[in-house]
Length: 400
Image 1: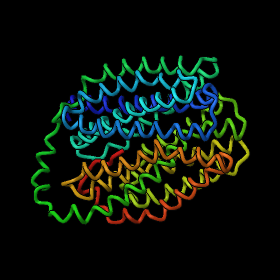
Image 2: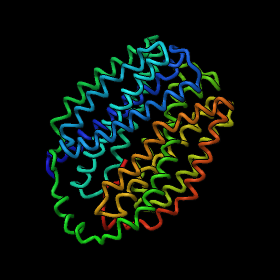
Image 3: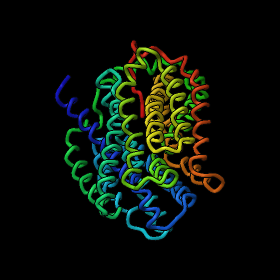
Image 4: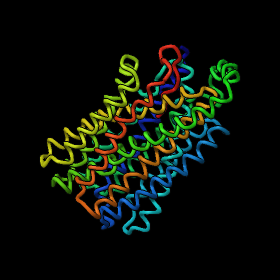
């Protein structure tokens, strides 16, 4: 293992952590921004659609740019843009301006997310073994860091704009300093090593795997919608439903992100031992129990426990779905993963708006019943992973 590859892996960890920190900084400031702009939960839910729309558009643009220019150029550029635009949602005092700020920040976040994942795939191919889950664990570490900083700034009485500007400035420096360690545009020989196999792959494989890929994509949407709901509504749940102060409420998301980190650090080993289907099924079931506790409990300590179990259960689900997409057809692994990732991110970044709309009809905690149902559907449908190839004989990227 050469030093440049190790450095590239470390740099990838840094960018995943950066992305998680930037998004987490927005998440923990949601209650303060909502109060500053003076909007309802339902209105906020509608505005979050624009965050998701911006992210989706950014993913499409960044995907093409990364293929054309290489991740080594696109990743740091999008890291700087995402850091610079982080402050925008903290500035508005009216819904229309906030809508524009969320659209721009979402676009830049989507660009960073896709480009860093594209680079992570190159690193994983060069390593020849699954390392993707560890990258996503550092994304969650970024969320924990954001929760800690958010709680500190809230206790200190700083405005959302001040805290977000400080974090964005740090993000610009981190993105620039880490750029030199990224792999070049054509970083590994694995592509040429696997090309003959791809050329020998029968044409019907593209057709026969198409339906399965879209099932995986729908499951990714359900799982990532649940994850997005925790990102966008966990702090508000403790603050508005259970009456916790803002500094305490920020730790709801931090608790969720912490258990997501733990689960992602364990996911690769557990999947190798028990199989990806077991990870998806039991993980979704555990997440369903966790969000049920959140929905019905009147106690803050129990809500923290529920968010913790929700995060632990969900942590290993998405990597299994992305990995299955990569295994389905080696000749079209990138295209298949992009379909699953695209629909999944629609769920994570735009889907939580559904929770906001449901608050027109029911209380916020009662709206979480939708998440219980989605976890149940995912657990039941986990059998789609039963036909996965043996990972021990053919390591492949495990996706986001």
